[in-house]
Image (tube, rainbow, N blue to C red):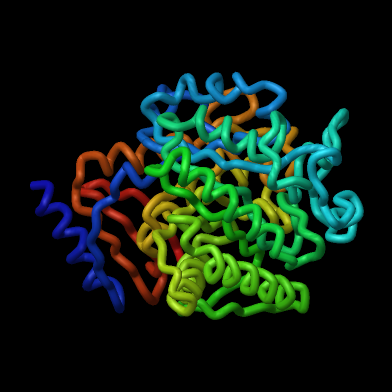
Length: 400
């Protein structure tokens, strides 16, 4: 009866609409995670098996080494991606440019919380990459990787280092990458020595509001976007060319629109093929609605759209060939440094699940049954859009 019902639905759609295409695959829950999960219980409730944490940071780790074990004590069964960052004060790092001035010139949304310095937030080049004395960068990496060995399932070195608005890494100038390559290669070599069986992720690539066509060609609409594309292209190619052996996985961050995902993945695949640095692609930050554009949605509309597009966003990323996707973020944080992301989160500031929470549960729990997933693409007329079925359950439909 179940198969007959599905057949009838598909038959009706075939005759009712001008064009229908079919695709089949399986949703694999081992591919899905949520950023910032606090414990295994939440991972199990959501049906995910991965999380990413923005830790360890140099200054934070050295001030309280026990914080590492405390952070991972409740993540014994959940796979963890840990992002290493060289955040420290002026005595330990040199930023080249003045961070406050650069952020002001770039019109970044970052605001430094009371009682903190910009040096508590942004990674810069360590002044000394040779010393192994207590408190040095090498000491930090040695201690952190040793502590995390057996607890961390993938290491990541720094975050979003390629963009023109440098929220997470400051070189000597925009697009300057020599120092980063030096730091990246050293850190990778130390990880390979201490924890050789754990994969290393390159820093996440972020794209802003740049559109790409289906074969990965950028389509800039402003001079600022053209400049951003040039810098991202140059720095990504530099990493792929000079440090390909120092990482195992490419990370891309997928905000903006659901429709933008295939073009961005195609661009990365194009750069991989052109440089000969071919790696698996993950996304350790994927979320929406677009948190960095001009928001015209009310809070209520934003929450609803977040829920409506969660499943299409995840499925589109999987269809584009991503091997793992980490949804951003577990809990909303209205005091976040980056004001653009304050509305994102599967639960609100008070811990109450938002509608997107249930959408994640449905997506992962249905897929655990290993039922065939059929994507029916509808073109033309009032029915244009996409309908996704797993078994006899319609997961979502999206108008074009």
